[in-house]
Length: 147
Image (cartoon, rainbow, N blue to C red; front, side):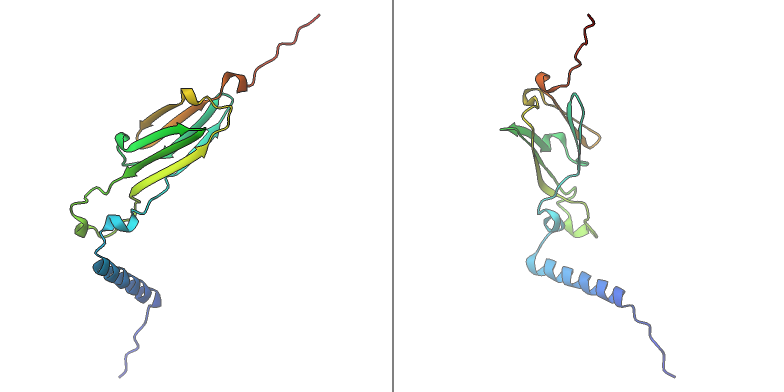
């Protein structure tokens, strides 16, 4: 009696991909952090209101000392680095999906922003940067006089 064997082409393709990845790691001796350390881009939300602009960066797992905020010629740059937690034991990783390595984001600010009074705070993995508008750029209410 002949048995019919069911084939799962997707599982076979995944197994093949994993085997190819394993071979490349062995040939090029890469560590897990090197596979994803080519740089990454943190997510950012940008809000503007009448008082100024606010930028919120998602930077979980990064020490405050690993983050740099700078402004040069109306360009705000946020850069830093996230390290792999257990760099000394890369062979113990089964999967590395969170990005690691250096990052940098730059934003051109409008000339009506007050770059001398930028405020940055870091809490719970979120970097919050507040950039106020220059006083002359803020909308103002004009009083109507009655005669």
